[in-house]
Image (cartoon, rainbow, N blue to C red; front, side):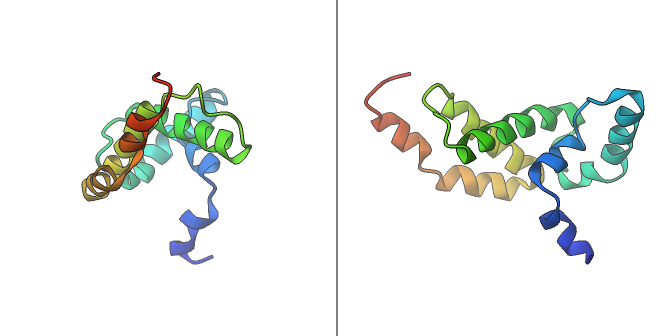
Length: 116
């Protein structure tokens, strides 16, 4: 497998699991090693591992709800947008800035008939 295909091959769940603190001491040691030696370079703006773990986990769960056609009516969409922009900023500030400038979600939320 070519090195540039690895990211496309790894599912977002697998990628998020590299950051999670589950699986016992050995798994945690492996996850911390991966963060320190490799994964932190994918999120240069994140700083600490825990700063990116929660938003990535939340976005992964949200993505699954969307994929399974679950209701999103009880979701805090403003928070999800903030998490998306935060993750994009952690990857590359220019990406986060672009996403924030081009999203239409806040415009749509202001038009929704039921205030949350």
